[in-house]
Image (cartoon, rainbow, N blue to C red; front, side):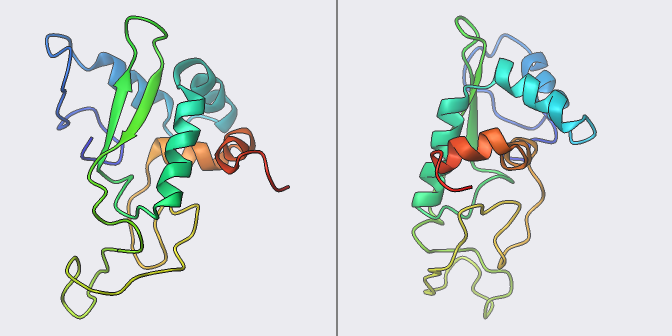
Length: 156
């Protein structure tokens, strides 16, 4: 995916290329924020590999990946078995304290600053970066159940 999960078009399909993108369009449509949160949660329980998704978010937090959500992730649907969607990382060069910083001495990508205060719930954007919203990310962090999966069940 090279967008914020707002459309199925413009993304590069790696497998099952003879099939259309109706399944991806259905996922994107059913995660729209215009749909009540409870409906989106029910859809997610039925259509997302939630343990894998929670692990994805926890792993990104551990490496402080800041270049994700608006692009740089794979979506995979297990079409032949569970029918569930999973999300995988791609292009994690801005991690381990490296951030793209808009107008940072004109260097953006090529700066030597290591940011040690990136937040765990890094989306819809670190304080340093402004990123568009992502439907899956927003749903995951808006749901108490999903947030607890991400946090490993700790905390209130």
